[in-house]
Length: 395
Image 1 (cartoon, rainbow, N blue to C red):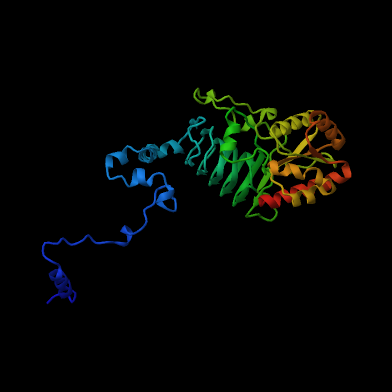
Image 2 (image 1 turned 135 degrees about the vertical axis):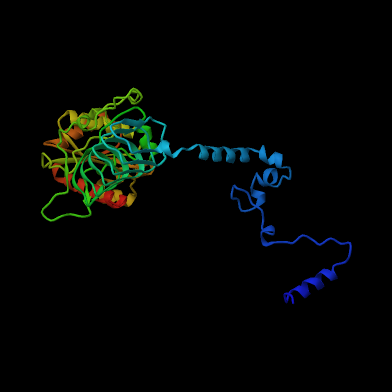
């Protein structure tokens, strides 16, 4: 007894002329057109196919630049130690990471008690689980910061997304590009991020965050309780280093830190606190070589005069957006929109429109800038711009 195909195989083998070798079998993958790691459509378009991948001499392939590059990347992958990107199970310790030590990787903080933790670098995402009575500073986080089951912690951090779940009694000085969210949490207090060290501005850029997009006080509570308030804002005169003190270890003291509001990389804003005056003013600066520096200079001047910076925003505008926001003055600014995103500042205080116009005319004489023309139209300007910006940014 045999397989029903065995006779056919034997007959095919007998039909093969003696002394003639059987040709190698051809599979579908052998018939595919060879391409390179460069992902070109055809071998003719790739500089590596003929010079590397089709070279029969293996030694030449192993000495080729592309092989060395891939090998180096693989070597770096093996060198990454997960322990370098976590703090776990610590108690009564001061620990941290210096600038350049995290370099955009994910980080985990868990099961820590009565610790001071400082991450002076940018990262991808950070999760903080089951921590109690800790002080935490986090440099710019490209993605989300997620607190879970934490209590009695004081924090300062900057991120794209901020989430809190099953936590109680957190005090957070925050810079968040989107709307912060709390869930099943109580007694969460928020203040505006204010911090400086020399590398921080570059870390914001590496994390893809704008120092002007900060929704620290615009909180969304997923699980509100009738008659109770799960979150609130810290007092306006709260001093950040009384909550998040500077590190005391010799290693971390090498970072030149300042917590003074006038040196903060992120402008310190009034947020959704009650405004002191019924008069506000909108200023919009258009992209140029010194836009950020000009915005910070204007903030310093206006705060020095006693006015409050309510909120800031950096966003790209199209012609139709400008026509809705700037109305009859839109033609003045249409040609400036292609240069990059605009920076908007809202100031508040009695006579703020007049004083803001004077400061802008004095400092930015040759720079085209939008400033509200009077108290009556300023409210319309502010509502129009920030409604557009929130829709544009999905807030």
